[in-house]
Image 1 (cartoon, rainbow, N blue to C red):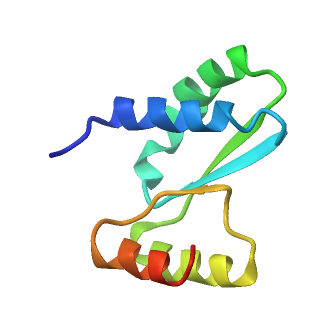
Image 2: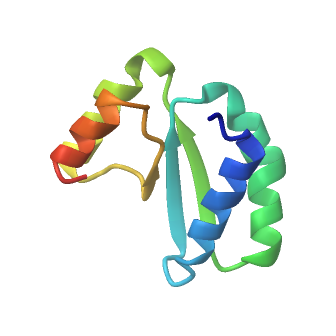
Length: 98
């Protein structure tokens, strides 16, 4: 079953709103093409109702995402919310405790 992007974005926004004490949050993704949507539509809408929370959408190009994410996870510098690839890549992250 494929979940529409707007439902995924809404779910992420709801998760972010639970971190009201955080101040700054980073969402990582491989969806470089969605950057304008996040910066022009989703994040401004979120910021209107959550003025004390700054959320940054930080995409990495798709071919580089998995290795870049693994590097950041290992170094402890990954974003607060990460977009996981389906199947084996996500399973591997879970097995590593991420």
